[in-house]
Length: 192
Image (cartoon, rainbow, N blue to C red; front, side, top):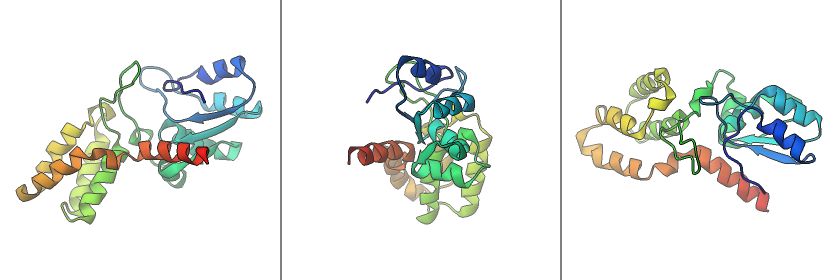
């Protein structure tokens, strides 16, 4: 298995010239600083005998868009995009460093939404506040969606006696990173 940086336009064509058909698992991709992997690139690779899986982020989006052409999807994020064609691409978008280890600077809305839904279930916020927060965060450029910003927003809507519990949820925010869970689950599945 070869792990490559977030995919960008041209990477698939380069891969096709370097090796015979194989399996590609598309997880993350660029579309802010470089053009995104195109549908045409994936379609050409599928027609040339390559197998494509998409999950977690850009891969989940492309898999939902190209299932009818033979691209396979996996995971919760893929299921979200496959079942809701109106889900915007920036639901999974984040800003990260340009070089390995591609450290995230912002947090994708899909992770924040997962936390907010739990807060509604646990009655820390009302459903109406949830709707307001998601609308506000959805209107914001994805690069500004940071945990610091979300925590500040939430503290304005959560009772003061619940701030400690909220701080604890942010300390364990990895529990809400379903994009990461999709990748780990896929890798575990491939090992068996």
